[in-house]
Image (cartoon, rainbow, N blue to C red):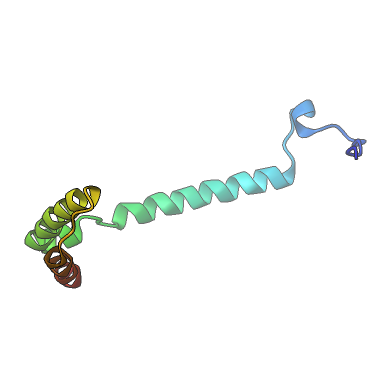
Length: 89
C-alpha cells in the first residue's frame, strides 16, 4: 500500500516553518526552561548530608551483599542486617 502524494510542498522544500511546528518548538523551549529552573532548586544530596553515617553503612552493606550475591553465598544474618538498614533510610 503506497502513501498518497501530497499536493503542496513540504516546509523543508519551501524553507518556511508551519504554525504548528513553531508552536511545538516554543512549547518545547518553555518546557526546557521550566525543567532547568526546577532542577536548580532540587538538592539531591540533602538526605545524605542529613544522615551521612546511615548512608555510609548502607553503602558498605550493599557492597558486602553484592559480593556475596555474586558468589551465591548469602548468609541469613546479612539479609536481616540489610533489612534493618533499609528501614532506617
